[in-house]
Length: 421
Image (cartoon, rainbow, N blue to C red; front, side, top):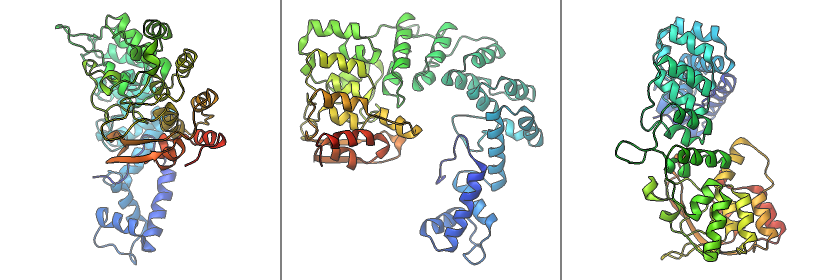
C-alpha cells in the first residue's frame, strides 16, 4: 500500500528534491527513511552503498508507482495535459500505447487515464487526438467533465457517445463538488430526479454531506432539483441549506421559538433524503443537537445568521447536551472549527473570520465553556473519537485534532476580546 499520496498535479522538480532529501536522511540514519527503504527498497542496498537511483526507486514505490521512470512519465504527462500540450501527450502515448488506458498519474485515482484527465481540464483538442489513437474512456471522461463543470467538453463527449440518456445516479459527481453548471447540463439532457417507481435519484444527501463549501452553488443545485420535479422538505433547516431567507422568515413568523430550538442529527441530515450518520456528514464542530445559528456557521451562511440575530436569536444559544455530557457549545465554537475553515487553509486564502466577528459584535461570550467529542470523516485519515472536556472556544481551536479545520483569525479575534483557554 502506498505510504504517500501522489498529487493530482505532480512536480518533477519537487520530487527530484524529495528523492535527494530521502537519500541524505537514509545515509544519516533517519528512522522514517530507514522504514521507507525497508518497505519499498531492495534488501541489497545499505547506508554505505545507497545511490540516488535507489532513493528515487524507493520514493516512486512509496507513491504507488512501480519505478522512477514511470513517475517521470506521469509528471510529463500531467504537465502536458494541464498546458494543453497536444504534441507531448501524443508523443508519450505513441512511445508507450499502454498509457492510453493507465491513469495519467500512473496510480489509480479519480482523474483517470489521459483522455479523462483532459476532460477535467476542458482540453478538447487533446481529447479528440486521444480518441483518434484509440482511447475508449468516454463515459469516465464525461462524468469528470460534469463534475468539474466543463460543460462544453461534456457536451462534446456526450455527442461522441451517441447522445445517450444519462444514467441514473449521474448527478452524484457534480453534487459532490457542488458544481451547479454540471448539474444543470445533466438535467437538461435528461438526468432524472426520481426513478420510475418514484424513488429518489436526486442526490440531496451528497449536496448536504459533501466536504465542499460553496453556498451559492448549493442553493442553485437544490433549486435545480426542485425545478426538475424534486420535492424538497419545507423545514427551517432546508431553508438555510437553500439560502431561502424568505422561507426561513415564514417559519420564524409561524414559530418564533425556532430561535431557541435545537435539532437532532436526523433533523439536520434527513435519512429520507439519503443522509447517513454523523461521520459521513462532513462538518467541523458537531451539529447533532445544534441550533440554526450553528448550522449557518458550518455552511457559511453569514447573511442568514444576520437574519436570525436580527430576529432576536441569542448569539450564545447553546447546543443540546447529550446523555454523556457532551454538547452545550455556543455558535462561536462552530466558527472556530468548521468545514469552511478547511478550504480557507487548504487554498491558503486570507481570512478575517467574518462569522466570528459577527457573533462577538452581537455579544457572544468569548469564554463560554462546553465539552465536545468529534470523530472526523474517514477522508481525513485521522482515526478515533476525540474528546475535549470543559473547553472554551479558544481551547477548542488550539487543541483540535485537525488544525486545517481551525481558523487562526477566529482565534486571534476571540483572544482580542478577552478569550482564554
